[in-house]
Image (cartoon, rainbow, N blue to C red; front, top):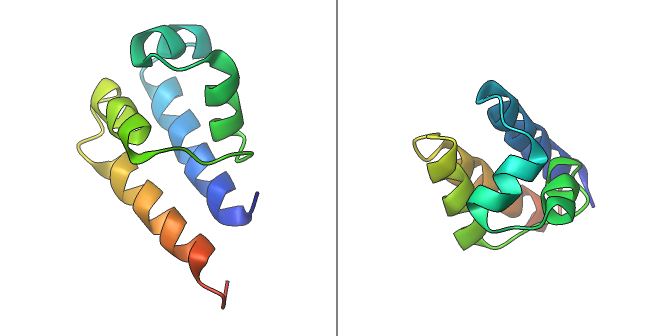
Length: 81
């Protein structure tokens, strides 16, 4: 992936750790696989808006994760980098 996906993944990891949750716990609560979450946090893949919304709600992020995801997608699509 690219630097933008890594930045979003880092934000996801920060939020998860701030809530003292493990990947296993989040996977169960958000109905996502542990592998998917790990790849998201590592910037190795992107995901659908619905998944980001579930994680934002779970982490009580107040829309911050959704906004970061949208900005990441916009930056990744920008040919200027």
